[in-house]
Amino acid sequence: MSRLGALASGGIIACATAYIGITHIADRDVTGALMVLAFGGLLALACFGLMPQPRPRKSFRYLNHLVMTRAERPPIDSWVHVAPTHALRPALVLAFSWAALGFLALAVYSCLMAFGAIPPASTGVSRSGLIVGTCVFAVLGIATGWIAGLAIGRSLRNGSVGTRPSGVTLGAATVSVRVPGRDVEIPWASISSVRAEVTPLGRREHVAVIRLDLAGDMAERVQLLPAEGYAVPSDALYTALRWYHARPETRWELGRVEGQRRLDAWCADAVAAYGEAPNVS
Image (cartoon, rainbow, N blue to C red; front, side):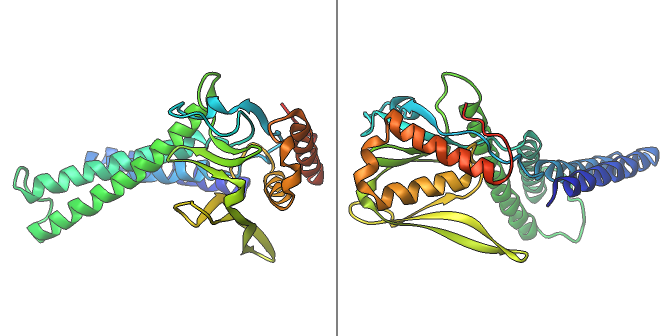
């Protein structure tokens, strides 16, 4: 969805929701107005939240690896280069939170009707149907609430000094994934290949996922990294992973100023490719 399309869709849905909601209120149908406002507001927020993010223009952050971990054990690499994730748009986070609250409210409402605490909304609904509905709404509420929690955690971790940054880190010995819901340290020696998985996007191909195939003592055999969602250009992150995987003799520079200079150059080249001034702050 384009930026203009998202804005137009969200605006149209918001206006239509307000008009229909006011009409229900004028007819003294408060329940109907609340349902329309809740559903329409959720759709409008989702449209605004799905607006494309600006193209990333920053470079890798050069940090002591201890600030990336919970300090339960010392990390293998002392200093690393971080490709930080950027936060989701607040409208999208609010949409997931709104959906979670709505599904959980429906689950409670269905449960109360199933056990006779309140009269059923329709005489044609059976108790078994209400129980199934309760389970479905509860699962949907938990799922959307979990997504909202991860998004809020990512925003908090990237939003201020003193919090653990979220992102992918490159060190001389390891590649680490430090994001809400995932915290893993992968030795370079355990990575058997680095490749991109592409999907068709109109007449072009779009890199959707960076795939790390793992070997050795790793419990999992694949680590998938989203190709988008970082404050650094995705091309720079993919180039760095492929370069240092294919050239073990150059990994000594990771965690050093020499590595940061090379990464900054890749980020600047990636930004220059789409005609914007680089920002390596």
